[in-house]
Amino acid sequence: MNSRVLTLCVLVFLPHWAGAADAPIEIPDLVVVANPSAGVDRLNRNEVINIFFGRNRQLPSGIPVIPLDLPASSPEKAAFYAMLVGKDLAEINAYWARLVFSGRTQPPRQTQNMSELMSLVRDNRGAVGYTDRPRTDPRVKILFELGK
Figure 1 (cartoon, rainbow, N blue to C red):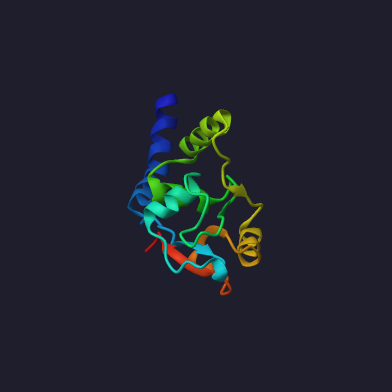
Figure 2 (figure 1 turned 45 degrees about the horizontal axis):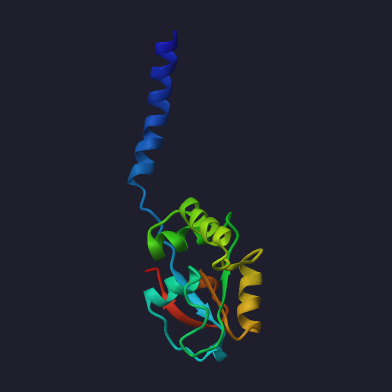
């Protein structure tokens, strides 16, 4: 009886599993944004990494930087760190746990959602965040492109 159930399950779900494997993986079009008055036109990958990993406390213009992060439940957050440094959120959290414990620095300020992140970037000269390009507020400046 169990082998019949297993066979039936395989026959029913195999087409779904096969189709899922053939489906293209959606790569988000993520961008790093800042306040237009931050005094920066572009950032390179290393500068973005250094900002979001607490190594740079200022933008290249000399303005103190305020890195902003999305909540852990945000798919954009997972995609951002995977695309930026090839690490998952567990690895990112472990990195910050070590640094915070040692008292060296603090992680990026976590926002509640994309709307709050955009609002903080618009209203704070040194704020830097990331977003999906289609959801970029026209009142912020794109400094780095991670996606397509």
